[in-house]
Length: 138
Image 1 (cartoon, one colour):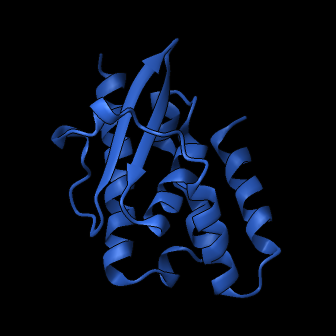
Image 2 (cartoon, helix red, strand yellow):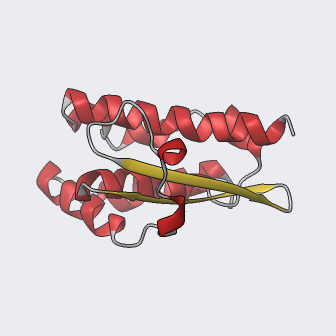
Image 3 (cartoon, helix red, strand yellow):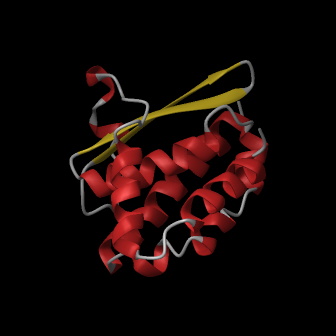
């Protein structure tokens, strides 16, 4: 699936919820399915800077596509990173760099996060795009 197709899927899933508490519960539930980072990869260089919570993100390339695994010490943050991984897992670096993540605004995610969590979201996206840039230039 393309990034846009996955984003559309997420928008559709979130459209069934009318209350943001239900959306938060769904995000927390999604966090339980995040591709888990190996304990050995929970190191300083995989820690995302700018997040209130501790978030580790690992990335590797296979057959020209990027794959991610993550973990966080906060359940809502784990859910947020799981959404990003769902969109970007198995995508080419070029496609990741060109994506705009319109689903974030469409589901109202950023506007319904606390300022520190919203900053963390931006930091997660920035880190994913930095990985994509690094692998594209290899």
